[in-house]
Image (cartoon, rainbow, N blue to C red; front, side, top):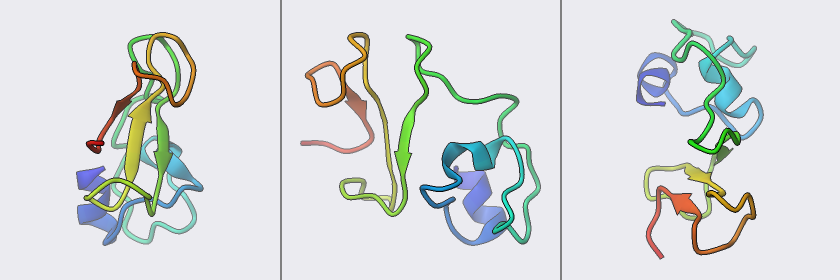
Length: 83
């Protein structure tokens, strides 16, 4: 995400989301990726959740995993923000 921002001046928006790190979205004028070889999955093989602009993240985006139980909003969620 940092490299994408460096090249394009901002983080990818919610749509196209993290897919923008794998393939060039139409909105990326200076895309120099791919920034990832394949879609990012958490350790439980679930896609990471991403929103930008974010509601929580101090860096401008929210990035999180729904954790082992596969349920959003439960104690095992892993986020880039503190509660």
